[in-house]
Amino acid sequence: MSQLTVWSNFYVIVGSSAGALIGLQFVVLTLIAERPPLRAKEAGAAFATPSVVHFAVALLLSAVMTAPWQSIGAVAVFWGLVGVGGTVYAVTVAWRMKAQTMYPPVFEDWLFHVLLPFTAYVILGVSALLAFSHARLSLFLSAGAALVFLFVGIHNAWDGITWHVFVNKSGEGEGEQNGNDLVP
Image (cartoon, rainbow, N blue to C red; front, side, top):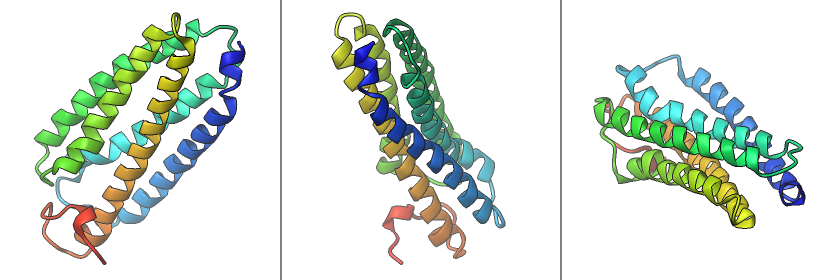
C-alpha cells in the first residue's frame, strides 16, 4: 500500500533513534547502579521502566510500520492493541508513582510519566479506529504518537539521570528535589 510506504523513512529514523536510546539507557543505568538508593525498585518501576517501555513502543511501531503490508488493516489492529495495552500501562504507572515513597512526584512528573503517554496511547487507539475511513489522518496520528513516545522517553531518561547525578550521587536528601530544578 503506497500510503504506508511513504512513511518508511520516518519510521526508520524514529525506530533507530528509539533503539539507540534504549541501549544508552541501559549503559547509563549500569553506570549509576553502583550506589542504588533505598526503595530504588519501587521508584524504578514508576520512573525508569516506563522510559524503556516508551522507547520500545516507538521501536516496535517503527518496525511494524516499515514491514511490507498490503493494506492498513493489520497495522490498524496492531495500533489498537498497543493503544489499549498502553492505556492500561499508563494507569499502572500512575498507580506506581503514587505508591512509591522515594520521591514525591511534581506536576512535570505526572505530565511526562502519565498524562502524555496516556494521551499518546489513546491517540494510537483512535488512529486504529480511523484507519479504514481516514487512512491519511490515522497515519499522521500514529506517527505523532510514536514521536510522543520517543520524546517522553528522552525527557524521562534525562530527568532520571540528572536526579541520580545531582541529588542521589551528591548525598542530598532522597526525593527532596526534582532533577530539573538543579543547576550544576
